[in-house]
Image 1: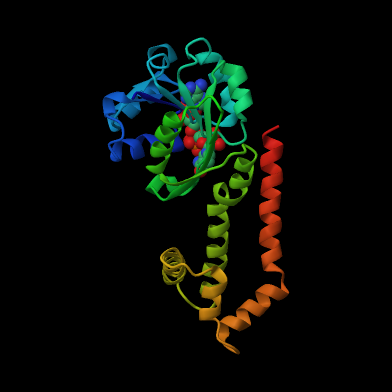
Image 2: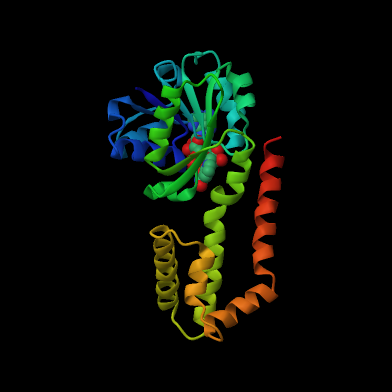
Length: 266
Ligand SMILES: NC(=O)c1ccc[n+]([C@@H]2O[C@H](COP(=O)([O-])OP(=O)(O)OC[C@H]3O[C@@H](n4cnc5c(N)ncnc54)[C@H](OP(=O)(O)O)[C@@H]3O)[C@@H](O)[C@H]2O)c1
C-alpha cells in the first residue's frame, strides 16, 4: 500500500514517523507532498520516505491520501490536486472542521475518512476519533484504523458531528491538562519550591495519577475518595474547588470549544 501525506508539517511528519516506526509501510511506499521544492529537499535529507513538491508525481501513485494541511490552506491544495485523484483512492483527512461533504465536492472522491487526532500522537500516545463515508469498505476502514493505531488509541464514531465533540474533549484536551498543571506549578512556586522542583512534583503527580487510573477499573470519583480522607487536606482543597464551581467552569469551557468547532465547520 502506498501512502501519500499532503502537508509535511507537525502532524504530517508525526504520522509518517509513526507509520514507519511500526513497519506498517516501507519508506519506498511512504510519500509526503510539501508546498515547496526547498522543503521537500530539506526533509528528504533528514527523514525516511520520499518527499515531493509536485503533486503530479505522487498523487496518482497513492492508494491512501492523508490530508494534513491547515484548514485554511485546503482550498489551494484542492485546486492543485484536482483531476489527479481517482474514485478508487481512499482519503483520510485530519483537518479540523472541514466536513467530508466539502472534500467530496472539491475532489470528486467518495471514499473519505475523517479523523480528529491530538498532540500526544507525537509520542504514540494520542487518541483519535474517526469516521467515514459509506463508500469506504470494511477492509479499507480497518487499514485506516491500523494506521491511526500507530499514533495511539482510536475511537470510531458513526456520526461526523461527534468529531466536533471529540475536538472539544480530546483534540483541545491536552491544553486543558497543561492549564491545570500550570496552575499547580505556580501554586507550588508560591509555596517556596524552585521552578524545577515544582515541575517535578506536578509532572510526576499527573503521570502517577493517570497511570494508576488507566491501570485500574476504578472511576475518578473512586480514586478521589481514596485520597480524600474526612477532615483532611485533600478534602479542604476539594471544598474550595466546589465552592468556586471549578467543575462547572471546566464543563462550560468544553462547551465553548464545541460551539467553536461547529462554527469553524460551517
Ligand atoms: N497540531 C495538532 O495538535 C492537531 C490536532 C488535530 C488536528 N490537527 C490538524 O492537522 C492539520 C495539520 O496541522 P499541523 O499542526 O501539522 O500544521 P503545520 O505544522 O502548519 O503543517 C501543515 C503543513 O502543510 C503544508 N502545506 C500547506 N499548503 C500546502 C500545499 N498546498 N501543498 C503541500 N503542503 C502544504 C505546510 O507547508 P509550509 O510549512 O511550507 O507552509 C505545512 O508544512 C491541521 O488541519 C490541523 O487542523 C492538528
